[in-house]
Length: 163
Image 1 (cartoon, one colour):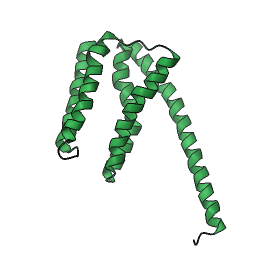
Image 2 (cartoon, helix red, strand yellow):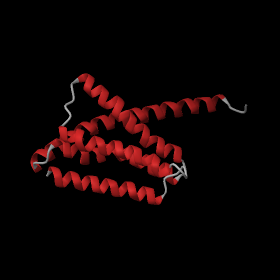
Image 3 (cartoon, helix red, strand yellow):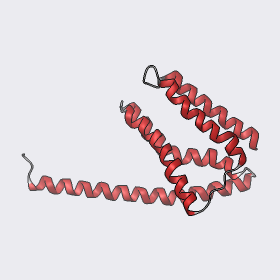
Image 4 (spheres, helix red, strand yellow):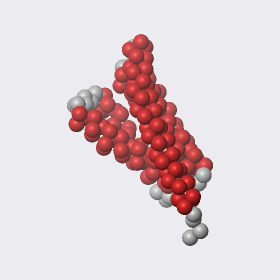
C-alpha cells in the first residue's frame, strides 16, 4: 500500500470530524424537535385544531423532511435502495422503536378516530406500495403520483373531518 503515516492521520481526522458533525447534527435535531413540538402544540391551541391533527400533518411533515431530502437526493443519484430503505426503515423505526419507547416511558393514549381512520389508512398505504411496484420492481411516476394524490386526499379528509 502506498499510504503514508500522514494519510493515516488525515483519515483519523476525517473520521473524527465526521463523528463530531454527526453529533452536532443530532444535537440540533433533538433541540429543534423540542422547539418544533412546542410550536406545533401552541399553534394547535391558538387555532383550535386538535393536537392529533397537528401531529398527523404539520409535525409529521416537519419530522419527515430529513427523510424527504435524503430520499430525493438518493433517487436523483440513482441510489434507489437508499431512497426506499430510508422511507421504509424510518417508518419501521418510528412505529416499533419511537412509539414503543414512548409508550414504555409513559402510556400513549390512542384516539378512537385514529384507530378507525388513520391506522387503517397507514396499513392500506403500506399494502399499496408493494402492489404498485410488484411487477416492474420499481415505483414509477404514475405510482408516485398515486401516492401523492392519496396523501392529498387523506390530508383533506383530516381537515374536513376534524376541523
